[in-house]
Image: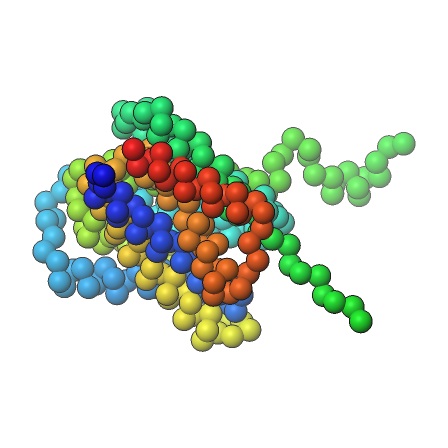
Length: 149
Length: 154
């Protein structure tokens, strides 16, 4: 069975980011979202420094590429901050979190229209199932009621 | 019966979206565009260069939180900071593998929805490590996620 390399890296990413779902919860249970975000961002710096020291990089890039890559980092970080604000502004986690997991719809729209990507019918079904699954996965079980003696 | 003047000042116009919904929609837009911009440069740079530039875009956002009074305090600061750093390291490393997936031919319209299934790993890990209960919805989600990954990989 053919197992494409892009799929392997995608699954590894899914696992890494899935683990962050737990570690972020453990972090924000102990400190504020602002402090958690601060240290989350600071942790990116040694990764970037390690790359600069160890990996030869080609800096001859078009301005457009520089801008899009840098803006990508800002967009991702801003999205994290606005998701925190949504929860802190009175939004219920049971609604905000699944709602935010609909973000691939925007990516799909832009990918199809601007990047001219094509999707097969099976992949389309997979996309729909993935979004439904993401919403279902975010619906946590209610906490156990305390026993009354 | 008319509304008293004081109450009129406090009345929130019903046509405005509640703040939590505006922030949620903004999040969808920001993350959605990020997914597309990542693919837009995937043919021009490798994952390591992208990570460096991504960090350059991310770090200035610290100015949005650096003056917050909520940086002080916390139930267990060392523990919270430790897990925040772990989140950053896994998040950054995951960003490298995510971008590598795009450079190896993964389409954004397929890879990004697959990434929204990361709660699959979260739910399983939370069950094993934190002993959190898995809801009936999450069990259904686990099943659908496996089918979705299979369909997306075809």
